[in-house]
Length: 107
Image (cartoon, rainbow, N blue to C red):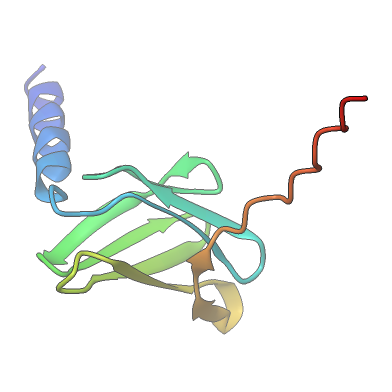
């Protein structure tokens, strides 16, 4: 029972630590989808990652064989890079929305 209380406390503390993490939706090379809600959690390919806070401006998220490095600029915008298996790495960019087909013209 005591372990359950400790685990719940640590989980709550981990969520509170990410209060200044902005929301974002990115794609990393290799078709890796990355997203975060404001304040966390961070998701990699729709699975929650383990988030670690190193400072108010730097976080790491790990999951799916990938480590994300998340730097927060003074204006609050994130820069996200990743490191994957076998030395794969790169910069993640904003997701491009799928082009929508125009609605058929009414006659």
